[in-house]
Image (cartoon, rainbow, N blue to C red; front, side, top):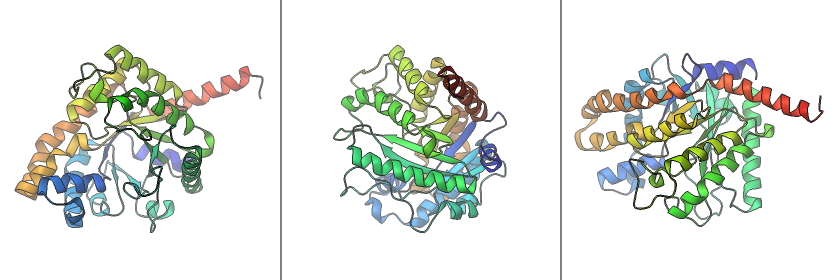
Length: 344
């Protein structure tokens, strides 16, 4: 790892080397939240609403976060209002995917490059990728090439590359029990694939390997249990073992209470995760407050409920491990395996 990557990772981590970051790079998902609260189509939600909301979240919550993840489309004003102690990650991808083209293919923001993101102040670059082992080989080959290109850009700049993997299965509803049964293997496969050196990923940002709405004891448990608590913990372990680079968890739009339960399972599984990039579990309820009662009410909500939400998550990071120590341990393990096979 070069000095630039090391410096960038330190800028987005806390004093322990754990990433306790806030994610608010959402664009399409945020427009949906605003559209629902305003009772209008998401497409009609104005950019100024997103900008103002992101600014308030950054201003109030970054004193409690090691970094903030923003988008360069609507998030740059918010980046300027973050706490001095908080690092900056910027997203490189367009929001969502083209539903007229099969495979949920990634598309980069046309007016941005990794170099431009760094020039805008990014300590690290993030790419979101929808990925599934159930996709056709030609689709996944395009995705592999896309990640390789971004990884090479970041390596050339010596800036950390965060790859966010959003797991899905072709033809399945992401919220279904059928997908819940497939998810652990899909997550583990993605973590193994993008740990390979040709992608030059420094940190994997992944969802937990189980669908929280189907886990025994989960606050969001529905009518069906797909995994017992014991089974869920075993699946956390098997997914973690597939990773050969440090990884952090994302909240995937669940409630704060549910995300806390997900992190409790990670701690009980004793997996070496290196922190979180937590988004909607921290701030999503503030959208309704903002729409109904305005910016002042949002600020007050963030100072109370928002801060409490982020502190709830931070308390569960005592079980997290420094990304630097994890990377060092994984490198040592890899060297030992090569040596055991008789390779120099």
